[in-house]
Amino acid sequence: MIVRILGEGQFDVADIDALNELDTTLQAAADVGDEPAFAAALSGLLDAVHQIGTVVPEDQISPSALVLPARGTALSDVRTMLGDEGLIPG
Amino acid sequence: MGLGQRIALVFKAKASKALDRAEDPREVLDYSYQRQLEMLAQVRRGLADVATSRRRIDMQYGQLETSSEKLRTQAAEALQLGREDLAREALSRRMTVTSQLDSLAAQRESLRVEEDKLTLASQRLQAKVEAFRTRKETIKATYTAAEAQTKITEAVTGISEEMGDVGMAMQRAEDKTEQMQARAQALDGLLESGALSDATLPTGGRDDLQAALDAARGAGDVDAELTAMRRELSAPTQPKSIGPGTEQGR
Image 1: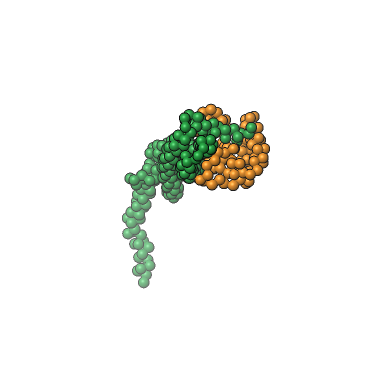
Image 2 (image 1 turned 90 degrees about the vertical axis):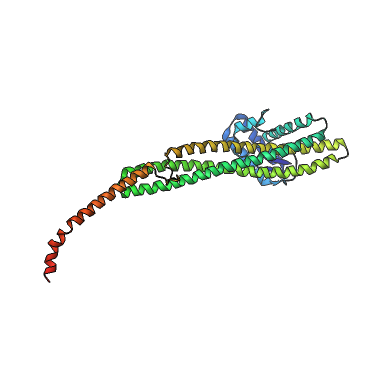
């Protein structure tokens, strides 16, 4: 399954279950607005993607099943990203 | 649903809006390709802006380093002349310069990070745009409409995501560039006002501190000359009082 880290590109991750759990932790931290917990969860999740994923070749075009914010992204920015107009251009 | 999946959905929703608008999905391929080329051009301009902004900061950084060194020399010189007041003034100005240098270094570094990220993102986008162009022609030659539809959706969604990503990298780099430009202007103002004692003025960098030092040194020179003259004036009498005893004794 393909995972994108914003600003870093796409990674092919075989064992997505390992990520889903971390992603749920991230979601939980976002829901209660716990900024430090969110930063820690995000950092852990990105590390895991780097560890178990392989970089998708530059000339391959595929949508990602999971898109993760860049390291250090503030919670407020992530919320805006999810909004209708959002941070995501296009 | 996790957060990562929700963000992925936002990308997909944006791409599918473009697909829904078109009568024939094949039109979307050409339209999307046009947008990709525009985006690539935008990213290149963005990168050039960032580089310009960084070069300006590099230049100011160099100016401040020169100022800092000059103020240190001035302080040492003032101390040698016994003018502690001037030495204090030079050192306190140097502290202002040093704090500017520190925060400038931090900002320069963060701009560099964004520039690197944008460079990588633009290289990725370039490779993807090239791949998209090839894929577009292959899809157009696909036999069945249903098959083409699936491939078009995948290609357009994939490339939209890439463009969204590079678009965000551009926004971040632009924000940083604007901050840096504002800062560069403020620093130019400070340097012009002489508050940071610009040592790199084309006129030779004579500032008020240097003028005071020169004056102090000038006063010292006058004093030294006066002492020398007094010594000279009184000199002829001295050999007479000491000289005769020893010279004539032989």
